[in-house]
Image 1 (cartoon, rainbow, N blue to C red):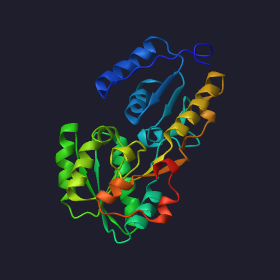
Image 2: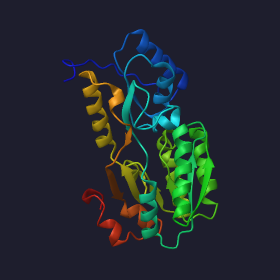
Image 3: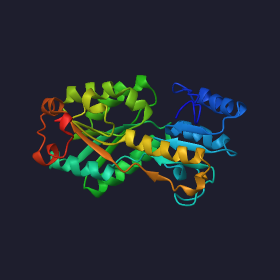
Image 4: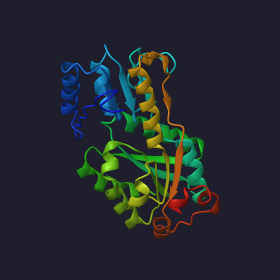
Length: 266
């Protein structure tokens, strides 16, 4: 129970890495017993500075890909949590069902975000395995996204399959606007983007992943070592569809996809 078993101080760097590093330093100066991070940049900053107390994480890339020299089973002794790897292979199956003749898909990525670069590479592998080509274009700031999205739609792609990262999550409406002009459907990995204009979303259940990470933190508070918890990804996914967005792009949602979607999203 918050206020009884623990006191939490929340800080938000608002996307600024310099501020983020300052916040981690402040947590250490104030003798926080645990540092808990959300998002990959926050975990990266904390991994460089937090070594003498528990470091927990949620909604971030696997720490092994961020510099932890160990493995998911044998990792840094003070770290634990649940990482966020999008269901790329599952998404390729959904794209194939919705667009059987698709041969090329597009996405935007943020070169400055490690998770974005990793997700671009993961999507590229999944697309190649599914017999499709990935066109990935970079954008570095919110102001770049509109032009990058427009350029992407001009690259002879059959659909946009937008990876999840901080930059493009914030600027998703710009991607939707470009896709609508080009009559291209958008497939996405963030549940909130179905309401914003993605035709189909296959997303990790972030609530479930956060809850599981929180339960690990509770056990660490009670005295269990973070080292005893293997790193693992979110396992529960959500399939949502936006029929209006699909129809606007000229795509029909097949029954095999619609029947698996959450009832509220139909």
